[in-house]
Length: 290
Image 1 (cartoon, rainbow, N blue to C red):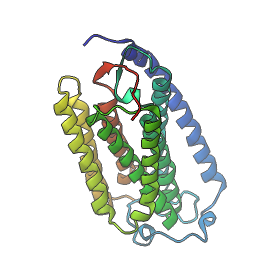
Image 2: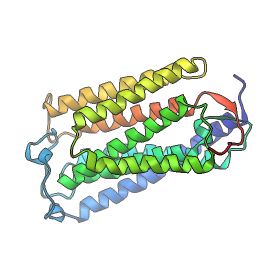
Image 3: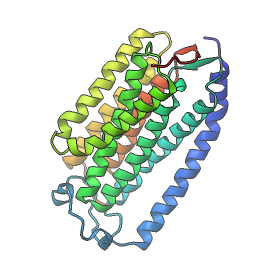
């Protein structure tokens, strides 16, 4: 495939956005360190304790005297922050360069990339809140962040599969608003539907759409990215299960299985996003009102 202005600009931009994401993530890690060093566990007093804390669901030691009751499981959420900042910068690039000659479909809809990046950051803070506090409100926000990222990727997959539907800028804004509305609605829905059913169903839907899109554009899509997305999430669930079952568990170790789950789940989501974001190029054209 002939390299376009779009792909050239992304290649030139990539080192800079990675460095910026690393710097911002480093700054956030300093903030986390200072919070953990200056505040104490009693900060969470008054909040309902989560079932996870009562049953010692995860291997890591629950240090009730510290602000971060599970430090490794809290700090490891910074991987979501890094990936969110990375994708947010790609969205900014796409928003500024939509007039370039050939563009990926997702590049023509930067609002979805903003949504994915924002959901990564939301999950980062939500999961950190949960593992730092081990409270019921923290657990709800953590789970909603997980649903949020999954829903955002589902919308990316749907848009890519149904690429023939041309959306106006106004319609695109409504799509993003609808996705945000669904994510917020899941705060209530999650109280009535088991996450053991709902989350796998959402993930399976994304995989089905990913396979369909690969069949649609086999020569333009990366089978490697699609496969890595699958491998990472399977490995993530496997490691998480071992952690819950306390297999090779050391509560005081720097290595914690649930922290590895955060990293692997983040990489799987990144590969899913990259599968749709980098690949098929189509002539950019002005959208007709829907």
